[in-house]
Amino acid sequence: MKLSESRQQSKNIIITACVFLIGLLCWGVMLQDLYTKRILSLREHCRLDAVVFADELQQDFSEGESIVKALALTIGNSQNQSAEGLGHVMEIVASRTDIPLDSILLAPNGVVAAVYPDSRSSALGYDIFAEPKRKMAMQYSLQAHAFAVIGPIETTGGGTVMAIVNPVFLHTAGDKESLWGFANVLVKVPDIFAKTVANLDQSGLAYRLEKTGVSHDGYVTILESDVPPTDPVSYTFSYGGCQWHMQVAPKDGWQVMGPLSTAVTLGFLTLIMLTVLTYVLLYMRDREKRLRRLAMTDQLTGLLNRHGLESVIQERLNQDKMDQAIFVQLDIDDFKLINDIFGHRIGDKALRHLAVIMRVFFPREAVLARNGGDEFIIVLPTRTIPAAERMVRDFVSLKKEFNYKQMVYQYTISMGYAVYAANQADGKSPLDVLRDADTALYMVKLRGKNGCCRYAQGMAATRRVQMGFSLRDVVFNLPASILIYDAESEEILFANQELISLFECDDLDDFLAYTKRRFRGIVHPDDYEQVDTSIWQQVYACNLNKREKANDAVNYRIVTKHGRVRWVIDRGRLVQSDFYGRIFYVILVPDERMDAVSDKADQ
Image (cartoon, rainbow, N blue to C red; front, side, top):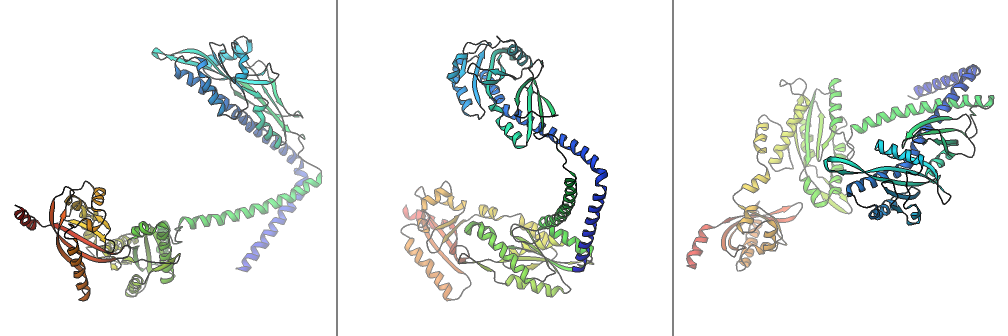
């Protein structure tokens, strides 16, 4: 490996030296051509700069354009509202702009009737059609239904402004338009060009900006650098009904080449650039490999993702490296509860922990992947199926716990697997076998989780039948009242709709409020002590006799929300939950026989 790298490095040095020598020998011949091309390149660069700065100029005016259009729209929607009543609108608009605003003028029928700020009130009553050039611009704006840029204009205070004007139309009956007047925004010059000038100076460019009126009657210089541009490149564009002419050139002139030593240095720099280019190409190749790896890897666990799994399986099939294997689907039991109770950070920690122990437990040739959520896939190539099955069973029984912030968290997994053989008669593809493993996993879930199961014929049909019944459907439609509560605090953790209806409550919140969220609130006050004692005596007896299940059975009265007293049969079981501790699962069934006896006794 090192010898190959050394040879490649020698080749790179020889190629680089040859390029340098050839470039040095040819440099004299290419000098004139280089000069010409450099001049053309520099001029093209300046032309592009002119285009960019011309676009910046239009952006400089865009806020003023937005203001006059907004005023025109506001007036048009106000239906003949007087200009004087729009002073607050002009004030709001002016306060929200950053352009060097001189003033805002509203001119119904061409006569200025409203001005912002008040310091420009001398313009009130001014007829904007009085000056021929301004009148021509107004006529253009009116005919084109568009804004126009007028100026530069000398103000009475000695300043220079440019005016952005826009016609204002009112919509009358029949969807016709009638001219209301004009909205005018006056911006300060050269302040409006401050950003563009700063960028031009920073770029080392001399510049000249010229414009015509709407009649295109000749250019007027608006802006020019201290050093006029020499032999400039220019860019002409239209904006606001006027033609604009942007000229730029380097401040120091078109100096593109120094003495011959500069050309020699440039040749050396060219070789450096080729070296850098080589590095960039190598970097891009490595980056492509890294991106390909990322596209196939799950970011949370570092295992393959589903796309990566399928790619690796296909690659091994193409290389005939997977004649026989066990495909395993597994997930973390009650993962949603882990997230809900402990938070997603603990859930993510459990996923990463499971990925780590999978890497440690299974051999190097095993393909490990995360299928999304808490689902994982293992492809275990093997020559002996029983040995691979033992490995799967051992992994299920392996204790899984991790520490996080001085707390120990435990979890269990369920695994379903199916056998793949390249020469098997059923002709199943790896993806088919993977689906079989998923079916086997589902069967483990039906049998109580925390186990493993091998796929067998007929499981798919069983799964289809079982999938037709969700836990929600069963709980909702089972004709019995279901209650789950904490054995220590008696806090009610779950109540189904049947139980809520039994207590004549409107909904779960109503039920919890009525019972005060405690089992004590369910039992008739006169029966509670006897019921509580009986339940725990039965649980104690079950534990004493080492019975597998700690069950209890009691009868007692309840009082519904509407005051009705009813008898119920309580069948409960004390269970140790991994997440909630000791809890009671209870089914309550109305005792109609006792209800009848009680009613007869009352009569």
